[in-house]
Image 1 (cartoon, rainbow, N blue to C red):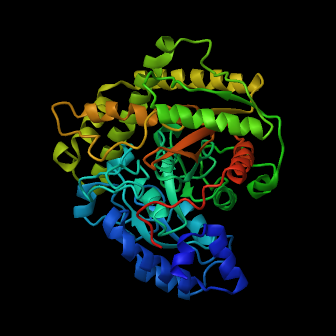
Image 2 (image 1 turned 90 degrees about the horizontal axis):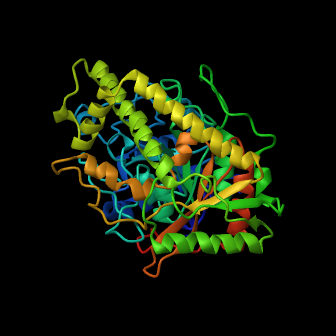
Image 3 (image 1 turned 60 degrees about the vertical axis):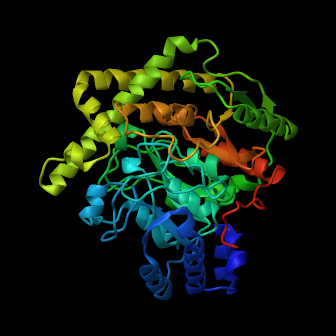
Length: 485
């Protein structure tokens, strides 16, 4: 059964439980066995929660859409009280820091019936689009172990791609769901801003840049888990409008005739790998074959890159750096001492220094620039487009070691990240939902994702079209060289 389970998505595994063909303890034991088989090679899971998972599976699992299905939490964001929470930091690892409370999202994962067997690797504070923290070492891409699985949800993506679990928690502040999904051949949906609560300790992280959900093997898993965990929680500063109907209803909708724009050049100037261009062009033809109109129009057609590129890039840096400065100050409050450069990686400290140097006025000015960009893109959708098609990334999964911050300027690693986040970070700025789908592989067998973006609140359209693409060009049978079966 272990081999069969490795090839099943979370919905199929849940159906085994509901039909009585398998029990939660059997699913959990099989996932733990798969982890023991492949995790030593890819270093995806860094905190083993096997015994807790076995106890949870044997003591009455909540009745939800994924009852008994094994799951992993990224070691950043959603957490259960008392479990390790190190966020890729050596200082928190050394202190054996534990989450003080259950987050609302973790509670909703548990209520959906998911059983957490471990926590996954992440770069320090989720900063980079690779997963190579000094605290826990590099996570390897199961499709090519010399390459990064992406970041910051790289551990989660590697665990799903390698067949350990069918779905895994992930979050996204500049592409951290969609980039690992692209690199690992998975589905990665970033929901609308504040579709999912980040409470109780966080209101809107980085003033709304981040979003929470999962990486998964199938569109239906992403739809079902979104139904299970979306919606406001007490004290949230604001929230996305509730869906008109459950997202799973979109999975069988065959509507056609959507008007879809296409953007093959990113808003922040960056060279685009030919395979990434090929991926989006193939996706455009596939969409047209399904009855949709791909216009080739882009929100930025009327504005030269030179006119906005610097504003997007540098204003994003203001918000990103402010977030690192704030997090280090919060950690100092928890630790009862000031956090110093010796406590963190060089890039983390360099970003925090930028965050401290830029004024509050500069911060509000740059947030205002982002609001303007958001209105421009929203206006483009309002004027007649339902979706925008782009590459997920401007590069194919780069080699491990590419994002090195040990030189004279640690910010070189941050600048090197631009091609990975060239198409994704923009929609953290605007808050719109976006999904990466595994529709292309290079000649060397490395996955390359394509991204679809919808107006705010319209995950229904994304999931509807994503399900159509999955039916037309299935990817479920593709498995990487490192796979637990």
